[in-house]
Image 1: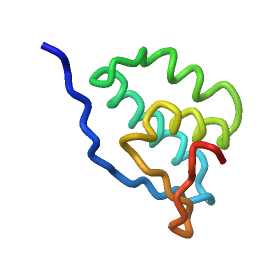
Image 2 (image 1 turned 135 degrees about the vertical axis):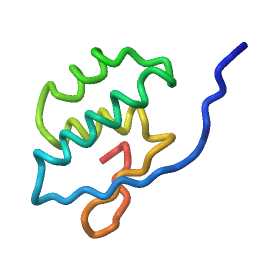
Image 3 (image 1 turned 180 degrees about the vertical axis):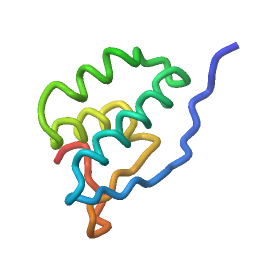
Image 4 (image 1 turned 90 degrees about the vertical axis):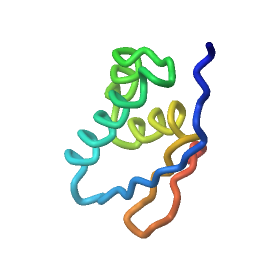
Length: 82
């Protein structure tokens, strides 16, 4: 039986004044989402944390952008191409 991927959308709003909290939240979401989506959690976390916050968000969106929208503090959606 094949696992079906849901297209449910969730939104995460980033508070640019608290990057440590944002990083922890994104890592926790990744830990939760990787197994049901068939991603290697360690690989995703390593890739997410290999550079800066902008890179972390970009990698997060590469893996989970079909399921979660990430919003800047002014409610603008951060795209995968940003």
